[in-house]
Length: 150
Image 1 (cartoon, one colour):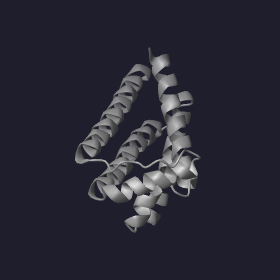
Image 2 (image 1 turned 60 degrees about the horizontal axis):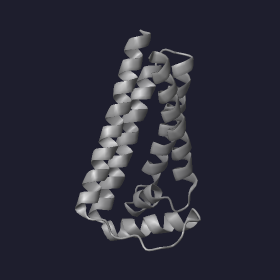
Image 3 (image 1 turned 90 degrees about the horizontal axis):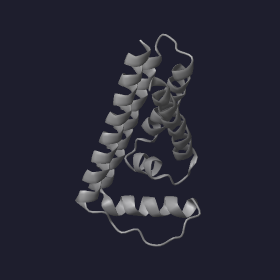
């Protein structure tokens, strides 16, 4: 079972690294535009750089354990959740703006430019719940893995 969890967590961390890099590089990524609109562009890049480093360390730790590997993994998961909460919080306060950011991101990604409806309050609650549940799931798997290899 520990082996299956290790593979799953490796996939999660590698996917997170790739997604963080994509969000950082994409000119119109919704998260980047949201942080820029808040005047927090430096915080966005600081979070992305920190998050990428922690996620890479976490993925390596799963295969070649080192002293602070689990700390890096837990911090990466927590930081990812915090970044998601900031973006969801801003989007919920400015739904029209976040819809436009999402549309620009889709267009830059080569997707069709069909209007994205302005989300209601329920959509943001659902996004928050999903982000929280996924974070708790990954944390739970990491705890299970840590107990299995200790």
